[in-house]
Length: 88
Image (cartoon, rainbow, N blue to C red; front, side, top):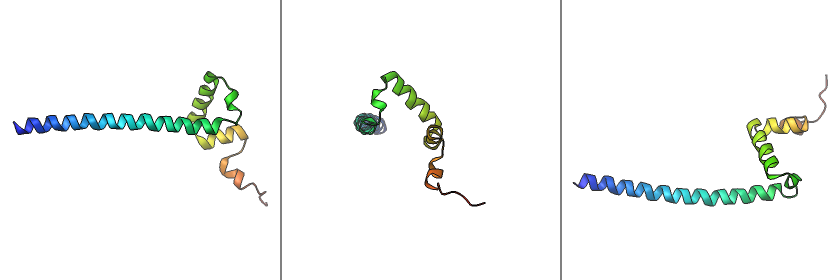
């Protein structure tokens, strides 16, 4: 019988751990949303509709950071820092 009780206790602990992790995840999601909001405010993106901003964010996310920057600016993120003309 002790084995069953230890399995039950382990399951109860696992459930409590999951609940604690879920709560921590929700807290971190709120903090992340606040940080992202602070980045967006003042950038011009705050004038986008919620639906439009979501679509832009999803498409940029699919591209990845460097590809998105290159597509939007016409130059790569690493090339921008090495903008000196090359001698031929």
